[in-house]
Each structure stands twice: as C-alpha cells, then as structure tokens.
Image (cartoon, rainbow, N blue to C red; front, side, top):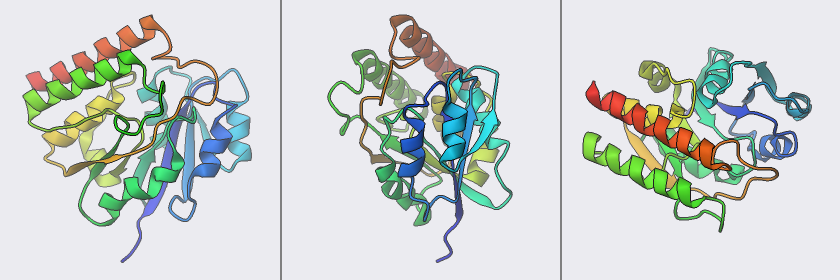
Length: 229
C-alpha cells in the first residue's frame, strides 16, 4: 500500500510555551510537513515553531478559520491528507495514528477526533460540553449524521477538503467542515482521542464567557446557514 503524503496544519496565537511540544509530538514517520498559521502572535510562537522544524505562515487576519486557510495556501502539491491540530497542547499528538487509520485504510474522507469520552477532568468546560451537545444534535436533526464532537484534532483527504470550498474565517471552521462533508456525501468517521488541559494560560475562546457565547452563536449560525441551503 502506498502511504499518502501527510501535512499537519497548526493554527496558533500566542502559544510559545506549548507549540514546540506539539510539533515534536507529531510522528514524523507519518507527517512530512508541519505548517503553522501564526495568527498575529505577540510572543515567540513563530520562532519556537521554526526552531522545531515547522514552516511558519504569517496570517495577520484574526480568526481560527483564517489561520487554517492561510496555512493551507502553503501546502505542497503532493500532499494528499491534511491533519489539523491545535497549538495549545490540549490535543494529544500520540493519537495521530488512530486518527489517520480510517483514511489510510480507505474507509473515510474525514475523521474527527472526538474528545467527549476521554477528556481529562476540567479540560472541556461546561459551556463547551453544552455547546457541542447542542450543535451535534442539530446536525443530526437537520442532516441525519450522528457526530459527538466538533473537535479540532481531525484529518481529511485533500481532494475532499478542496471540494468543500471552506469559507469560514472564524469560530465556525470546524462545524462548517463537518456539515460540508455531509453535503458532499463524503465518508465521515469519528475516533476517540485524549484531550488535556491546555499547557499554559487561558483559552482565547472557552476561557471567557463572552468568548464562549460568541463562538457558540457563530457555530449555530453556521449550521443554520447550511441547513437553509
């Protein structure tokens, strides 16, 4: 079996204390390229990422989706599978092989790492759990697919990703991908992954009530927008 070329995309904002360990934790026998979308960091995130062997792309436009899109623009032509992983150390790179297995076996086009069963105590806030449950329930009702999570640690075939035509520049990136995959009748799968408390500091989204509310509203609006179509 020919192993496809795999690249990891890491959106990052002020994560100098965690990003080096995230990059080092990726199995480079599986992942050839690591591309960091630096979303306007004011600390040494970019320098640390380069020191650990990543290609760093400056993406001054703020937003999770913007950082991912900026990094994706620098994929090499032969990359066939893209992995997305957060920079804060909450996703466990050791789960990479199990995340990729359904794609490498030819069984899935998109694989979501589901955090709900194996999250470390306190790693998922109550508002995250509620928001995930509500969003995934809506997807099930509107699109007929049972997801359990909108986890950021995921893998997708590049040809499928390109057909999705991703547009979101902010909090809706993950749910947009999952909904667009269903609209394309792509093969989707979930695998359980570990989820840890972030390595340092407070989450820019779930760490504040305002951030959680904004993200939740954006996610639900994204689902509703695709349902109307």
